[in-house]
Length: 283
Image (cartoon, rainbow, N blue to C red; front, side, top):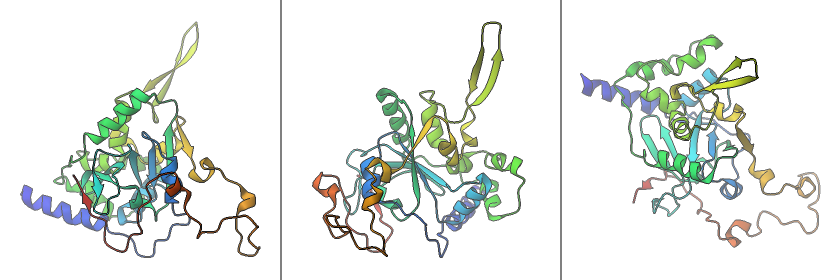
């Protein structure tokens, strides 16, 4: 029976992970600026383009359906094309994997940076996630996957709890539990429950950590403890130097054919990808 449930679970996961036809992000990522801006410990939010992404965005009322932790280069692991693996993420049907940044160059992304995180705690957060590469989750709990095939109207007060039903393994992976657990190891807050404690001396906040299965990608976006970092602004934005289609290009402005500054600075820029799914070499 367990073998049958595993196979059914894999079939469901394969369908949910299939890309939706006709998806076009309004603001695809600038890979060079993204690569130059990201720091270890940053959470990268992604507007996914598969079936489960649409359902997660509906349940969470958010643009973001997936999240990954940027940890920097993971040893000597790289893709078949030689690009280093720098992201740790948990994927439906795959479990915890490492990925290159170029995986999301055609998708809309956002960087959420933990404010004031010490170097020591940042290393612990990244190590926690990296050590779990290869971890899998139990596909026997089909109810966790089956409900995503039923896009029925759900009252807003039930949407978050829907993301945490069942045994939790598939749902926790979808709902950014891996990253939440990594930050919990250093007691860094995301969206803790806050209880006000009244006393004669003062009024103070008491924080309580939520269970990791209740987190979704948007929680890093709305968290008061994470800074939203936009690569275009971080790299120096000058609106006067923008090239508009109905205006002549100002003198002295470099065009798209100019050499990429990232190459001059020694930042790795991957070769253009021509088809294929970019299979990873896990050295």
